[in-house]
Image (cartoon, rainbow, N blue to C red; front, side):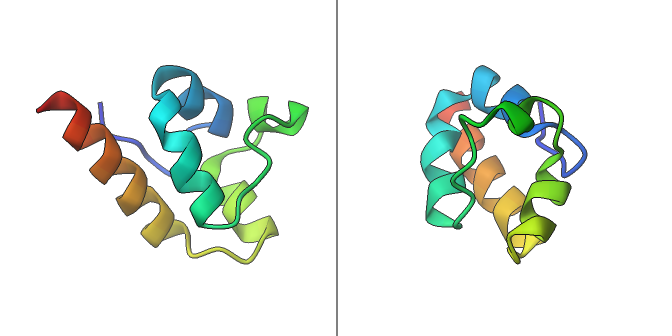
Length: 68
């Protein structure tokens, strides 16, 4: 599965726990926050001034490594 900016933060972290560190490195520290269940990656990134495309690309790199 490819991670997209429309997915919720919680959805990604639940399915791929190893992505938590990617979110943290990008400055999105609300991975455990109750809002993460409803907030898309794009919404969270925009709220924190984070480049959404770079974040999603890094998230997908981590999940691609898992599949190998």
